[in-house]
Length: 101
Image (cartoon, rainbow, N blue to C red; front, side):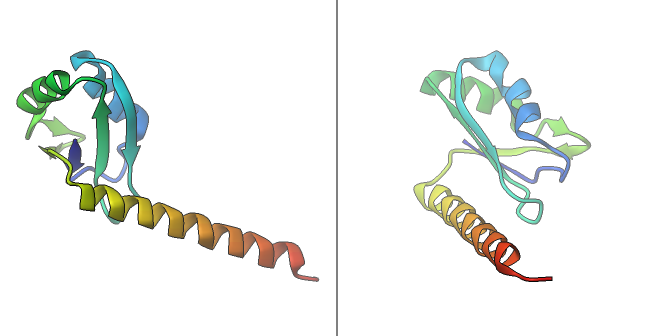
């Protein structure tokens, strides 16, 4: 499931705590601050359906959550963003380790 319009202070732990009463969760991911969305993957579809029904547009930290079924393209774009972030971090770390002060 995709959760959009998240407050910048929402963490993966907080999303897990909110969604876990509906059933076992495989994973939770929150994107960087500028994107404001996250993903919750349940073990069973019917648990995800219960959460979708109960939580759509409920408020979290003063903002209504927009919950929807995630599309493959959305997941791919988040993974692409994550891979780019890791690549940038590795490059930056390499430059720092090889810089003589």
